[in-house]
Image (tube, rainbow, N blue to C red; front, top):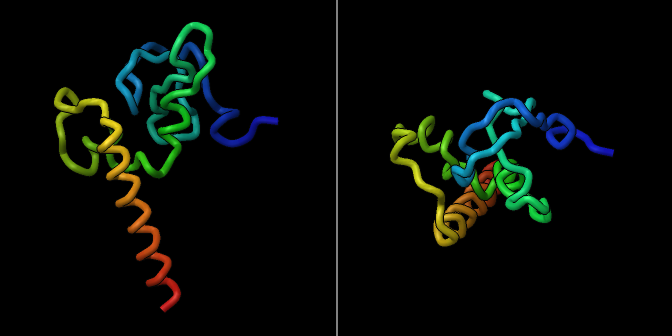
Length: 107
């Protein structure tokens, strides 16, 4: 049984650049603000999920295309796909933020 964002992905909603990797995608998440374009597979056999999972993963917050534009005033045309190292650094930053927030909530 599918639920939440998984259930609301729509195919054929138009062709556009994916929000995480910049690949051409044909799916959108109808629950996310702005219905962002995302891919559900990385090849024709469809054996791997790509940006649909990463977009909904907190480790990618702030490094995806819409985040760079909205929170850091970067031009969309200047955005590039995050490297593995950038994702790793960002994930550590998000984890540290969560820990700090939990500590502050307990005080």
